[in-house]
Length: 310
Image (tube, rainbow, N blue to C red):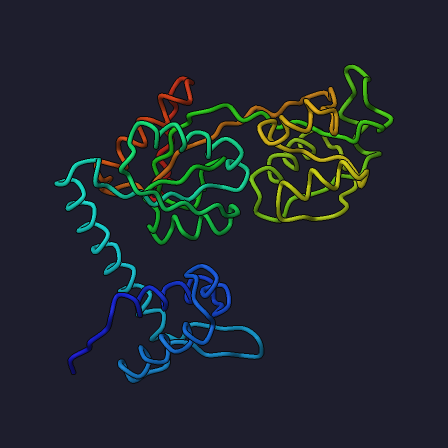
């Protein structure tokens, strides 16, 4: 049986399979949900077997669907390799970049990209700003050329190079009782309420690790999915928060938020530029990687995450 499957059908199918949601796939691909459903139905009709099943409100892959995911990702990876090879022959001026960045990195990544585009004016850049959970899914599917993120994922086989310091600080409303105090003991945080990022957030993980290490148990209040809403909530007096210092420059300078001088803070972390190990970087991606590392200006630190060595 000859299968006349299109790459668009595979792209739509892979997105639905990754999200297990037709709605989120439609948002990612900038399509309507009926258009996504139609592409999947056409694919199922072509292979003459169901690829998804819906139990209640949840979408699940069938065994055939799991097989299709494996092969569709291989085929899309090969198509990306063709694109990279052709771009390499054309040179950097004709290249394309697919970059995913963690939402926290967005505060300085746009300036970084602006400087890059000033030098390489003809490079086309596709940029997605997403949370850590979605970024790791995209990295696992080998979709972006490069990602800019916090701590590299332990569960994936990646090459990650540190390019910038990322200090995590505790912020408060300027009227908070601890503002202006020096050398605040970490134990004092047990009496405070903290506004939190969503589960899976690198900032949330780092914060909890420090509190757990020193046996401090603060109260966790509102849980939010973006840095902007975290900052707004702290400014409104809903609690304290741990954030990257890079995300609050404007608010600290304007006096809308303050950084508390708390024992064991700031937590010193790094930003990384990462890609799947073994990935063949295009000439454009390699030049962007070198550009990020040179702009970051810190001593290089490479992390090779290999599942085989764990």
